Length: 263
Length: 301
Image (tube, rainbow over all chains, first blue to last red; front, side):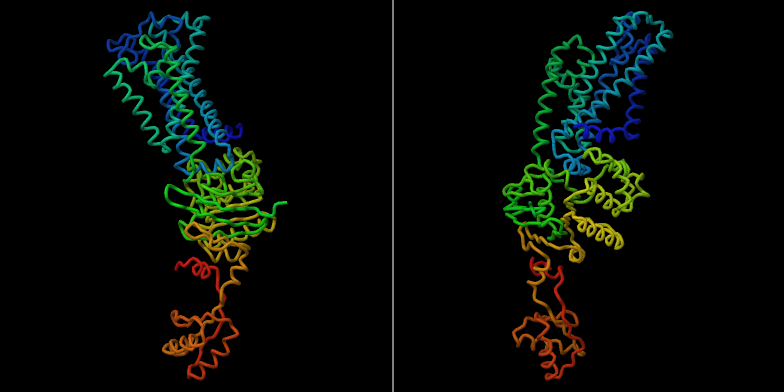
């Protein structure tokens, strides 16, 4: 399987994909964190959907990772797109047959790809964390936010916990992308369907019936990234989200192993 | 020791109600170049896909280098293949594309540059695949197939898009590989090319085997033809009648009569034509070539 991971990483490290993705991560991680501090006194709010995150909240031990936390969902969408495109393109380019001729173990191909994309996602999360926290540290004094608690033991623990949660969430989004790529076998279809569902359809459904938040996959993964929300407990999100990802991965694996490669 | 590189028994593939390949049987001896011919849609690519483990046969058995096709992991490390044209990542260079496959198969990465040179792509190895011409893509596909130093090379239309010089190079390359002991199983619609390089032929039509065996046996089965031309075009019909009167099939094509007969009947024809007042401008034997044989056996024109 290590051969598959190495081969996959060669594709993922190509400059347009790697640098392009990292540039987007740097820009949006910096932007989300900067807005928290630059708009701290704005009556329209300084966080997601007009929420106000005040100096008291930002001054807590968890204040240093507030910006990084807001980037979690965005990182998930990027992971979904990358995982979906990297998987589905093997069908559209016809390269899957080359891969299977060189490595007939189909599950090895699938898991090797997954491991390589997880490494890619991990780098993305590390970059986002560094940029988000650095931006916060740089802008906090100007916004008169106290940073004394940010790097205490409690603060470090908050960074570590959030990092783990964002990683779980991003990998969950990525696996959903990979499943869509395997099922739809077209990058455009897989990405369109995934993004449309997560950004629009789920939000519409939740707006119509709030209790659906407890059952829809995107809501679970977003809640995991934030360590749980007021409406959705972390453990519940982890369980329901895990079931979605697990069932999707099993169905996609069975299809991938059994399906004829006829294109 | 197994003497067949490929051995197929009763192999079929059915898609819904359509039988793409129907109970085929053939063998390809080790160390030979075997041409795999058939019209479009005859089941060549489907057969190759089954042999490479990409699709599951509906019925039948196959063995590659002595291993059953149900276990491609046992033989694919010794097989090189290019199926249905080259397929690579457009945003990667030729070199990077081969590196991906070399890493995947665990082959020495030094082979990448060696193979780029072997197929004449060394100068363009760093260019993105999407900038390649069809011929260059084809060459890269052949290089990828050669990565494992294969004992068996399976190529599907490898000369597509190549210029005459490129075709000649590929022909020489395949012959060299066969001389080094590699079995080459190659499909092509350029039957004249296959005739030059092949020792064996497997002929497929509508999913069924029409012929499988040494190319010499195939040609020996075909009747030789005598081509007769006269000075006057109006005499062609008379020549045809003379041939038919002697029990030979004959047909006028363009400015000559094609008579299915051995060359030792030619003096008799010459004499009969002279007696009928016909002056023959040409009387020559024509051995059937693979293309004619193919059309005759498959009933296609």
